[in-house]
Image (cartoon, rainbow, N blue to C red; front, side, top):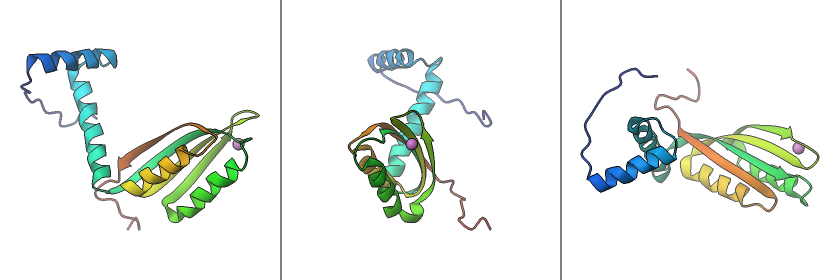
Length: 143
Ligand code: NI
């Protein structure tokens, strides 16, 4: 993965650099470079969402399936998304809890809004959307 690694100099005022180093340390990074790369990636993702670009995403959620009509509601939401839902993995964790991983593809904002709706549903205990840009040369027809 380290192909074409390029070094560049960054000028930053001392106070900002000190705060950055605190953050690097607090987050457990070994180097400033690693932290900076992740910051840039995160910013690229948020720019991606802001411009509503084609996105592939996984939505992971944990929920209690004994909450009334929750399973039905979550299934209905996925049906409403139609072809934007590529696949769903369901794991019956224990007597109460289900883990679901929903793989989605579509415009960034549509996926983010869908994830917000799902995660805000009563009975969903925890969840997170991980989104990334579809490769620029991605083609649906695999031709
Ligand atoms: Ni289940």
